Image (tube, rainbow, N blue to C red; front, side, top):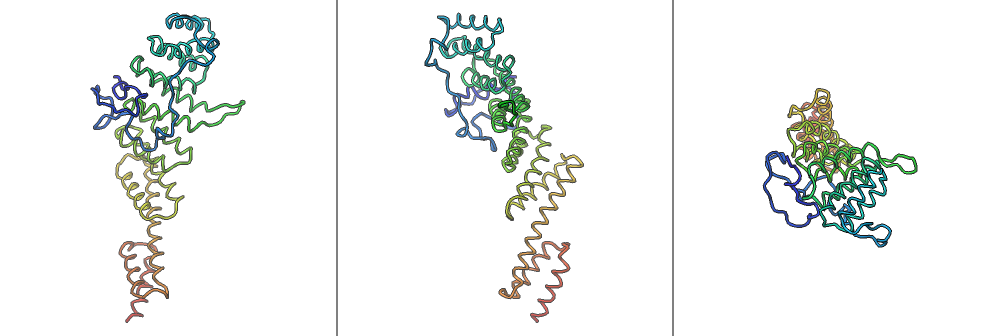
Length: 344
């Protein structure tokens, strides 16, 4: 199955109109085919990303330029350096070929060699990812798309595990890693690892303390891959993320009602584990309590000297109609009786 080539001929063409092409069965889940230009809520937009530019010959060509007269000779020269395990020199030689002869048949071979050296020999996963991405962006029709996008995914996994090391100190590179996973999903939304990649993207959004955006990614994952194991995980994680947002933000009736609606949906799907079901049920009870508290405070607001008894009676009656079993119901009934007696 070629899950990439049919979806996006070249990501370098983003911004141009894409024409639907014949797609083999199973390329993309769901009722329709997805393209790299489709909206992916929760992902960084194209405007927020640094787009790779085409490699060009350097200013100091006599130093960094090719050592041979043709692309074929330069490829053989770079390969000989690689055979000697002169990894950095081989990488430079391959890179010089790509820059000098970008449209040659040897260029995509050299570009892949650069990425392979970065990954397997120089152990620089970030550089490797950038080089594999360059290969897909500019040579998608001249490379094994499926193989390269899978290498991109594996490299993104390494980036997440390793983090950045600066002067022997390890730092989390959450944003760079998340964008790497996003690049993979955009280039191969029909790949078997795409749901897992989206789950990671949402988790990294939570690491960035952006739970609302994470919930959006979880929701999109469930929509795109409803039958995947990751969709069930996303359901639970989305519930948790939504509750973090609910607890942090100022009271908003519509947000609370929307959260209750989602939590009820999550409970009714039957896809939550027993422990998860208990926790999500607790979330719903907590959200419902917020609505009840707001309704009670609203009723109390009308029960003041500046308000008419009729307004207070109506407010208390509405509370009892909506929350007849509330712990506050006895107190509200007593006060409602007093107001009704005073009005006689």
